[in-house]
Image (cartoon, one colour):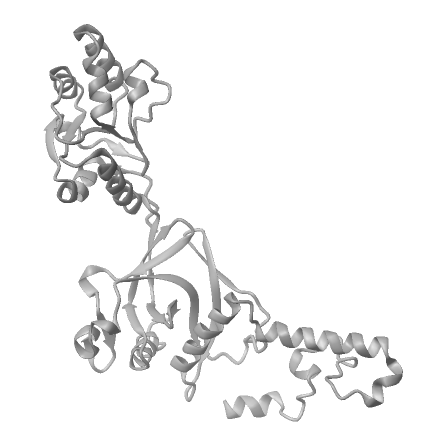
Length: 353
């Protein structure tokens, strides 16, 4: 996991140089200083002598207001104000709207090795873009071996051992009209309370199918069959069917997977010859959408059973006329038993599956 908490000024400049049309004016050797916050600062109060609120690890933006204030000061006061500010070892200073830079600011930036940048963009546009790029640069990231597919608008992350069939499942989902995001390696970054996954640039739109090799999904099925990134909402782990493991057969278990501090719904799906895994994943995505809208089939059935138990307790003499689900003799049984589905035994059902 790459949990970024800082980026160098050099990395920051490389990312925003083109969109902001940046030019480096002074302090070239200070590009190894670090930025640790996606927020910026306009140090107007600091220029007036209030230095307590200065955050040196932020990008300092000087616009028309700050520079016009400096012009109201005498040369001695201006030099002292700039000297005290840059003595804090700021990450970098950015001048907006191609404004003229005071000579004392140029000299002090060179003396303290503080990178001084300038852009033709207005302060508001400049700040908006810096926030976007820094938020992306500083966000926690990780990479997971798996496949990410957009299924009916739900970002489904498929994981499992090598050769379990993740890529084949993804290809089947594409044939059903869904969209591939990433195969083999999913790059994940945290954006607020969301997880966003994408493929590395090198393998974007590509999928590996054993026996066929590398396939380009965008070229085979059109660009509509792929997408660059997707919010991850559901995790499904594939594993070979194990006779010693008890799998969820009701749907009342609430399993989650923690990625970068964010918990997402998770399910363990056993793989066995004859099971249509792509269809099950598709149904899982649709069921996830229903749950987000308050429709939970297993819980609804559980409420019905509990309601029938309450009815029999309140009206015991009416038991002979009651034709609903009688769970009174199965206080600890699962829902299948409570629903009197005993005519199909577990071992027969396993053989059918």
